[in-house]
Image (tube, rainbow, N blue to C red; front, side, top):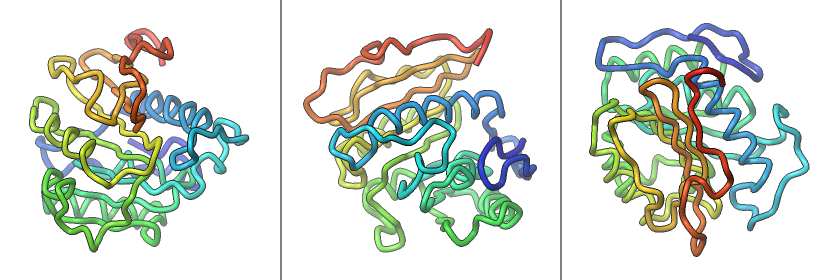
Length: 227
């Protein structure tokens, strides 16, 4: 497990403290961030529907983006965003051992100064707890919950109803193929979906008034053969 791109590229990350924490495979993480950068270029969060002139792979894509990493685990997803140039990341993880791994990985990658690790349940945070400790509103929310934890559906719903997102924010959820997510949750509309074995990557955008459906941009597919 390593950082794929950015200032900490190639840095190894410490693994999970126990079997309850399941880190994202590097290949799947690479696919996720490839999709995210494409979407960030097409429509910048908080930019009122405006595209950016930045090129995919460039640090400018991430300039000013504030990230929330829910169910942080090892912190691999939020750290990848920071390495690529995100302005800040709040890591939310309820497991104390996992939080220590996140902190260790932030120190190893030299990204501690642009982050905070919060020891609290993800649902409580989304519902308003620890608001004074957060850097909300967010342009990107990353969610990698325990694979068969259906409570993530409620977390997404609460996030969609709340005030933690900027306009056109992206919400990325990694989940099991056995857990079915809706095409829209209030203002959150599915814009991308990819499958990799049993893993599904679902990406939503805050798009009030836009028709739902992950097929609207033609990017629904299976990653089993390729990323």
